Image (cartoon, rainbow, N blue to C red; front, side):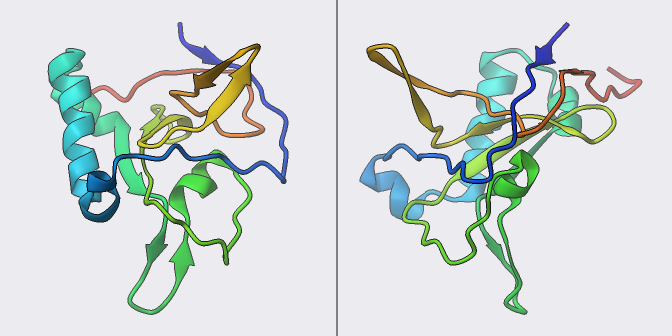
Length: 145
C-alpha cells in the first residue's frame, strides 16, 4: 500500500528549481522529457507500458494558448501559489501520476526542488499536492494487462 502524508497549505510556498546543464536549457522539450520519463519507468524500472500510459501524464510548467490564455499546469495540480507575472528562467516539466479516479497522487519534476535536512541538502524526488489528505494510490488498470 502506498500512501501520502498530509501537508498543510502554505500560500507563500514557491518551489526552488535546480540549475540544469546549459545544453538542456535551450533545447530540452516536453517531448524529450516524455521520452526520457517513459524510458526510465518502462525500460529501466519494468513498469508495464499500458499501465504507464493510463496513469502518467507529462506537462510543462507553463502553457500559453494562441489566444494568450496563460496557465501553469504543474502549479495547479500541486496547489502551489501561482504568480502570473513571475519569470521562469528554466523550463520545467513534470510527470503527473494520477490515481484511478483521476486525482493527482504525485508529480516527478525534471528540476526537483531541494530542502535542507540537517547538514545535508536533499532533493525532493516526488511532490504531493499541498493540502492533500492521506490517500491510497490505486492505478487505473486495463483489463488486457
